[in-house]
Image (tube, rainbow, N blue to C red; front, side, top):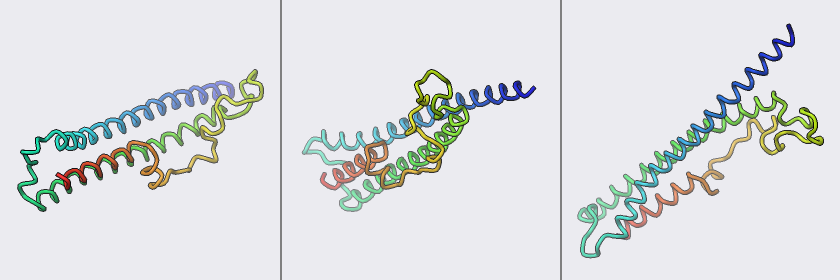
Length: 167
């Protein structure tokens, strides 16, 4: 009887592990789509400004400072919306990774030689998420200043707004 309960717990953990893995892949895909959507908009503006004939002027240039301000505000809104959406998706992704780590811990994936014949090593490297790392969060500054979708979106936004003011 106890063995059946243990087997059903193990099967449930395996199932949950697969479900969490799928959710993690969906969140990564969503973050990629958000970045792609916003970068297309920003690159369209940048590319448009780069290929505009010097004799022609951008739409907002007819309105002077007000036109540039409105164009900059619109680009700023796109960038901020995209960054916030990416951060929200990233927060969900971190929660899913924490859950995945808990399941993998319960499956003994980090326990050395639990599955035998591994020469006293665990299935997963320790850095992949031992229980002590469950609540480790990445700060906003690290998200923005290291290479990732958020920093690329911010950089494209700065470049697009700069080009609006230089046009």
